[in-house]
Image (cartoon, rainbow, N blue to C red; front, side, top):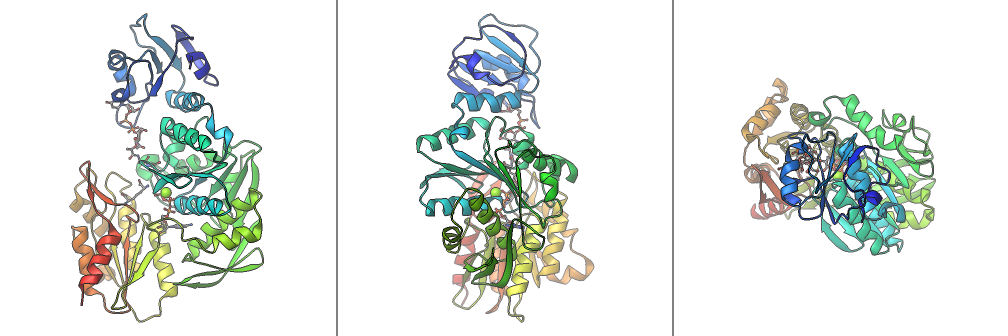
Length: 485
Ligand SMILES: CC(=O)N[C@H]1[C@@H](OP(=O)(O)OP(=O)(O)OC[C@H]2O[C@@H](n3ccc(=O)[nH]c3=O)[C@H](O)[C@@H]2O)O[C@H](CO)[C@@H](O)[C@@H]1O[C@H](C)C(=O)N[C@@H](C)C(=O)N[C@H](CCC(=O)O)C(=O)O
Ligand SMILES: Nc1ncnc2c1ncn2[C@@H]1O[C@H](COP(=O)(O)OP(=O)(O)OP(=O)(O)O)[C@@H](O)[C@H]1O
Ligand SMILES: N[C@H](CCC[C@H](N)C(=O)O)C(=O)O
Ligand SMILES: [Mg+2]
């Protein structure tokens, strides 16, 4: 495609070179550049991509998008100066793939917790309704039944638009995608046409990246602020900041709630280990999913489907059979009657939700044993709070490693230990090795007890110093439960 066509919609400050030059590939990483590539110099959180411009030209880049023109310009290269290279990357990536998001109904789901669950429920629901559907999520991406591994919750714009283009080629009518706050701030979704946006909730997470809760809130809100008039914006009216999301949107404003007045209402009739009995818009339905937080996720999926003109009874019938995403409240009972639960709770609110769900549905005399770690290179401030919440809601807590990434796992546990109050000291112990921690939980447990292994859910690895080692909470928990007599 010619450069001038790719630049449609980009605010250009200056251009030096040939606007008619043919571009064969896009890259924002110098290590991916080959002949004919258009390179975007993006200022990142670690380095500034402008430092790699010369190197990319040596690798064959013929177009450079930058926020500041280099001092020495080469005749063989076309340079485009823009206000924001990341914004340009989003728009150009979309143009490069012939704007795939406008050729299907793209629904974005944002919020601290519940994005994967809601997006997956919608994907499964619309497949059940007979549509060709795409899914972009933390666990995996889907084009109908084809699974494409996920690297990020929201991929980079080049990968994202290529995926959407493949969905269009596969005749997908809908795509349900998670929109992370990182993606909003880094403009990964720039240039996309959304048919709808859904908000789950906002609580403590990612303060390493956003610095303050207010900035985190603004990132989420920005997604709704930018939705077009023809789209819908569906929010959780029970969340403290749910209505904030709708303040400045041009999209049609819709709400769902269990407590407040809302367009889509549900009431919990019964909340058991086997599932949820809900009254949704005056119809009683038994759902396979467990916990009041999942009542919100189910209602968000239901509301979205109705806003997409689907039949109420068909929607509820299919939703009632769905189990949601892998590694979310995934439970099994051992032969001794110990209940083992694997869940992706990795924020204070999620840990509290899962443990309060367990507290609500347990019989009363059994112990709740929680195994929990916190990820390295992520928000440090949530570590003591997660440990505190785990202690407050469990009889025994084993603090352990999650994905240490580049941090010292022992130091992460020390930060978690700061959240263990003197009265909770007797409940908590720390075991660095995650497998040993799960094994210990299984040995402490007696028949009827409940073990929660939180934080890694579907993940099949443990990331230590840039290397991903095979690790699967469910596999380890099942193996250890099977080994006790
Ligand atoms: C903090 C964060 O989001 N980082 C993302 C970001 O990297 P960065 O800003 O740190 O980039 P950088 O290393 O400073 O480099 C700046 C620029 O120079 C380029 N570069 C760099 C080195 C080089 O040799 N050559 C070169 O060209 C880089 O490609 C980049 O364009 O941009 C990169 C390219 O898109 C991402 O891969 C990277 O994701 C990292 C791996 C990451 O872990 N991100 C997580 C936190 C994330 O995004 N999570 C959210 C989920 C959150 C949730 O679910 O709630 C997600 O959407 O997945
Ligand atoms: N609606 C909800 N409200 C609060 N907590 C929830 C909700 N839904 C799920 N959770 C908790 O959060 C965990 C993560 O859920 P899910 O994967 O759906 O969220 P997510 O927003 O996609 O997370 P991520 O930011 O990692 O992509 C679950 O395992 C559960 O413990
Ligand atoms: N999307 C979240 C996932 C956290 C999962 C947890 N296992 C960890 O590694 O911290 C993040 O990237 O912060
Ligand atoms: Mg997710």
